[in-house]
Image (cartoon, rainbow, N blue to C red; front, side):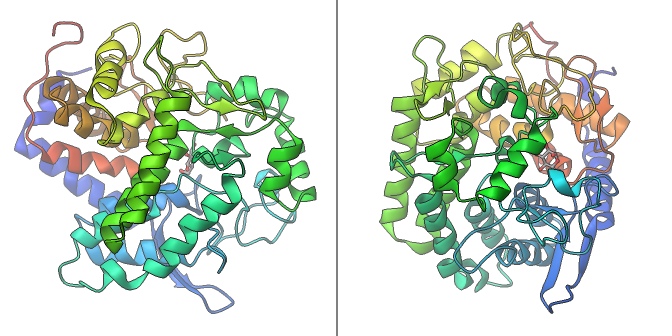
Length: 426
Ligand code: GLC
């Protein structure tokens, strides 16, 4: 691919920004559902991803806040009314289009057809996104506090329903609740019930039979994980909630999650954070970007975070790839940099991962490495457009086109960066 420094010019940044805005506008959907509930959101990438996904919408709102904050606020308000009054917020919501009959049985819904949303959660980023959007909402200052009760109810729902052992870490009961559907880290846990195998239909059937009662599913089966990335998202939201409310108890909850990650998920030998699987909470020793995601928590000790960068992100056998940050360490047998039908998160580089980790790398003093991640993705996006993900070795754009959260790149390139050195020359 072309020289990564091509993306560093102001003209290139401007071109990316206008292409990013066009994607957000093209994917925007608004209307009123048959029951009178209004919605406004960005779908990830029509026609393939026509619905609303919780974490996609949080990222879309974060991207919109720099383009048209009024839409960012509308999208987050829509996320907030997508679930139930008890605080449950779904992973996928079918606002303007029902799930197609062929796909419908594979969504984690109550029935087989006609549901308005799944019964599963997504990475809980709402309070985190809310604060970022509030910071960009000087013309609507009430936004910051208008939904504190609902946000609190949502965070309490997660604690009550998804932390049955009370150790501070949330559990997920379906792989795609982390958003990382086919990540190889779920293979040893879900076996033939993983997202890309025929047995996934059985996992859906079992959930429906249990009416998605997560306490029951967690108690009775071993197919669940205390997922590192989901808990990083949770801690980010709890911290944000502390700042939005000024109530220190939210910050204390966030610190409890961080302590649990450090004490229970951090692997001393490798410095990586591993998910804890099943009733006996065995660590899943597979290196994926999720093992690095605690880097986004600036309250964790600097030496723990720096080790993630130095021993993993800067290692060209692991995560130091020509383009972006691979979703699976390149030294894992399961690493697959290419597109693979129904197999996402098995190697390609995603923009939201760079958006979460590159600023943390900069903050810790690894500016040149962060610049390289950003510039290489920017070059790929200028050439192939805002794709769902990119081949970390060749930079080729893969998966859906016009992918909403890939426009987060526009914010990343706004931070001035130096022309990166070729991988391995630092
Ligand atoms: C894919 C991704 C998931 C995302 C969804 C919508 O399933 O793996 O993370 O939320 O698409 O973009």
